[in-house]
Each structure stands twice: as structure tokens, then as C-alpha cells.
Image 1 (cartoon, one colour):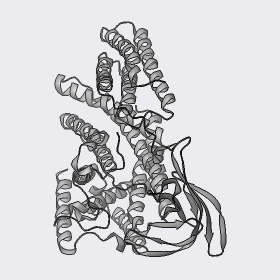
Image 2 (tube, chains in turn blue, red):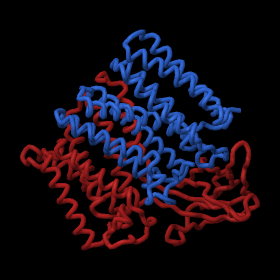
Image 3 (tube, one colour):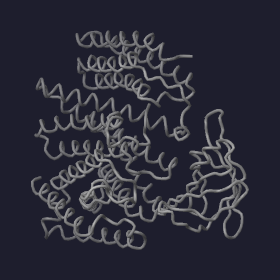
Length: 257
Length: 284
């Protein structure tokens, strides 16, 4: 049985692996070692999630703490994909730091829930819906980091930001539609403007604005970068912000622990 | 873009005037056949405007991003407004004089989405006329959301959601809606047994026989996440007598009929295909 108490035993070696890879890529040496260390870190952390899955007897996706685990896993993965594609030396350092922050939150403030899964969540739609969303969050998270980087350092990153946003938006679309199909199966309506759904729609619309704005005014770089930040804030509201939003209290069926 | 913003602003004002003059949007009025008529009007309107685009600059402009981006922005802002205001339950009168606590019936909200769909329809028309292979992902995205949103919105008035309470050993033909009106249905549920399953995972289950006017449909089990289908109705396990728990001698079902659903699904699957096509494109 693996519990939250064992998280640091896996997280620490994983973060060390990712940090070594990040430093190697920052110095621009030993590309094979960069891949190797990142992948070993992913395997270590992934095996913790797998063991949690087995001991919980359901995918660890129910609580905020559990979804954070996936986010911590996907960030270095998206970082590595971005690195392999565009050779940004510092991207792995970013993704490692962000991932480590989320792991630290989980270690310092674990939200332990051993209660049985509510019946509506016992569905084959459950795992794909949340995992796809977590991957989208990680992809758009990296896009937002690149936007901030470009805003501060004035280094051209638009190709990568655009591509990551397109991939992230596709995943958001798939996650949202899977949610709709699942909701139809479980509650009889595919869309009921529940606060979570409303913010998912707002996030989706804002990323659509970004994509269309880039097409319409490619030269308007600063507004596009600022829009990335707005999109990401919307996403955060959708992910966990609504748990604290007064208008959503007691009105959402998407209540995480 | 400025024109697009002005049109959106004008639409907001029109919406507010309509809200003050006629009150909130009455979705129940949109039930069949009125929604069918509205669909016909919308599609003919789009086709006509598309045909006249050579002569009228406005119709040409409607299929461009200069019109589309402000429309998206207006929808995003209305949706965020919906996200930050506490809504009254469906079917209730808004809690303040403006109407934003009943946003789904708030004219400016509805008009912003209608405008967006009109523009999406126009841009689809312009791409559909000259079908090209490279237009396929574009059409999957745009036509998909057009079909899903138009059919979902127009069809919402035809959707019926009823609750049926059945006692063990009894057969029930009646169900009630949100307004406590009783409906007599073409199908009936006979409940043999309700039970709460603890292992392997918590679930509720009802052993039932479904009846139609002309005889028995069949015996089956209704579980959470495993609804039954019969004569266009879907039957969901909804509740039970929570005070009695496993000893509950009643089971509450939710019965849903949604004749426009297949059309909505066509739109949803087109959007899914569109989202997947991005990974197949050579561009990135």
C-alpha cells in the first residue's frame, strides 16, 4: 500500500533527475543524458502514480492533490517534447521548477481522501476526461511561461507559443467534449452551465480568441502575449479557482476535496 | 475590428432594450414546431446572405475575422459574467431587476451567442461552396460547433426531464417535471427491488420491468452511469428513500427525452475529429 507519506521517496529522486537534465540542457551538453535523466525521472514519478492507482483501486484523480500529481508528471513531459522540438535550453529548468512547486504543495499540504468514489465518478469516461485536461493544463502552462519570458526578455518565442497553444486548445476541446458525452451518460444532459462548465467555456473561448487573433494580426505580438496570461488565469479559475468563488459555492457538481 | 466591436456594442444595447421591453427570453416558447421554423429561417438567412455577399459588403465582412474576433470576445465576456454571478435555479425569476442572475434567459447573453453562430454559419457557407481537401479540418471545427450549438440550443425546449417515483412491487406510468406538473408517459416502470451495492464500489441499483402500452418491453437493471433506453426515453437511476437506505422501498428515476440529441452528437464528433486533425497536420 502506497500512501501520501511515501510521496517524497519517489518525488525527491524524480526531481533530482529532472534537475540534472535541466542543468545539462542549460549548458548545452550531452543531449542523450538530458533525455535519459528526464525519462528516468518520469518513470520514477509515474510508478508512484501507478502504485497510488493500485492501492486506491481507482485512478488518483478525485482530489485536487491527486490531480496535482498528474500535473507534476506532465509538466516535465511537455517540457521534454518542447525541448526535442525547438531545442530551448532553459525549458526543462522551467518545467522542473514548476513541477517541483506542485510536488512541494502536495508534500507540505496533502489532501488525503480515502473515502469511496461517488457513483457518478465510476465511469470509463472519468480517467480520459481528467488526464486529457491535465495534459492540456501542462501544455498551456508552458505556453504561458514562454509568453512571460518573451514579455520580459523580448526573445522571439511566438512559433513555440502558437504551437503549444494549438495543441493545448485541441486537448481542452477533447477534454471538454468528453466531459459533455460523459455528463449525458451520467446525468442526462451534456451541458448544464454548471460553474465548472461555464468557466471551461470561458477558457475555451479565450484560447479561441488567441488563435484567431494570431491569424488575423500576426504583428500584434504584445496583445497576444498578454492574452495568453488572461487565458491562463481563466484556466486556473476553471481548475481550482471556482472552489473559492462565492458564486459557485454549492452550485457545482464538480466539487473536489 | 472596430466595426465588429461597434456591432457587438449595438447588439448589447438591443439586448438590454429587449430585456426591458419583453422580459427574459422565453425558451419554453421555442418548443417544436417553432424551433424547426427558427432553424429553417437561420439556414435560409445564411444562404441568402451568402448569395448576396458580392453586392452587400456587410455580408462579405460577416465571414471575416474582423467580425469574428469581437463576437468571440463578447461571448467570452458574457460567459465570464455568467461565471461570476450566482444564478437562480432553472425556471426561477431572476433575483435582481436586470436579469443577470438568470443569464441563460438574459437577452444580451443569448444575442451574443446567436451573433457568433450567425458568423460561424457565414464562414462555413463560404468554405462549403468551394470544397477543398485542406478545408476539411476548418469545416470540422466550425461546422461542428455550429451544428452542436444550434441543435443543442434550439432543441433544449423539446428536451423533457421528468422524475418518476416507483414503489417496490408497483408499476408507474406517471412522472413529474420541475414545475410539479404530472405527465402520463407511453412507457411504465415496474420496480421489483431497489438495493445499494457496497462491493466492489458503492452503487445503487434497481431491478425493473419496462412496460409499453402494447405489452412488456423487458426486464433489466438500472445503475448509476448505466441508464436504460426505451421508446426514445432514457431512464436514469436518480435517487431513493435516503432515510431508509438499503431498506428503501422506493426508487426514483429520471426520464429524459431529447429528440435533437443525434444532431448534437454529429456536431460533437465533428469537433472531436477536428481537434484530432491538428495532430495530423504537417504545419506543426
